[in-house]
Amino acid sequence: ATLADGDYGDIVRSISFYPATRLEDTGLPDGHFDLVCSQFGLEYAPIEAAVAEISRLLKTEGAMLAAMIHRQGSAIIEQAEEGIRQAMQCEKSGLTKTAGKLLGELQRVSESGTDPADDASCEKFRAQLNQITGKLHNAQNQYKDPGQISAYLLGTMAMFDSRQSGSLNPQQKIERLNEIDDTNAQYVLRMRDLMSSALSTDDLDRLRQQLVANGLEIELSEPVNYQGQSFCHAIIASR
Image (cartoon, rainbow, N blue to C red; front, side):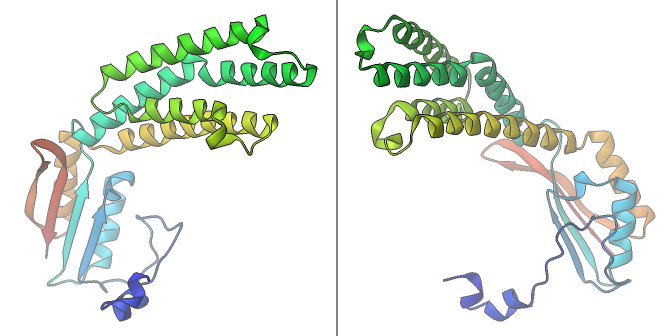
């Protein structure tokens, strides 16, 4: 079942999506909309251009902007900073590279018919792997939510668990380790992008000034708190 099958099916099916559309240049008709909503989107566009486009889209009377905005110092931004630190620790640890070397040695020993427990090279890489995983496990204690390190550890060590990766050949396991590194690097880029979008106090002042200059009245502009922490900033403006 989907949303389109429920009580609001007609409404859901009437929604149009415009992918790859810039917020500051939507191409939508002038003065056509009663409401513009933005949930963590407005801050990614140049403020002046975005507000000018919002003003153009809204009807001249009885229209409203409602926005939730990332702000500097919020819990979300702090989590992003913490996540980046975890991801960088994972990258610098050498865990996946050492795991790849051990997998290669285990494959070599298996093909030679030697017992891996008696192979000095396998033992060396096992010792290195244990040392790295121990350091990363300890590093988790530095964080409120060590999810990035935990996912990195679990994904890597799954390559040595026959229940999770027994169907993969050695080359596929190496490729999976590369995917783990790629995912970790992409996470850092996403979090840096998120952090760069967060508005400062001065940015929020400038946003309010631009809204007023474009004929909108500020009805609400305040931090949104969740479980005692600053979550984001909310703005409602109308004309």
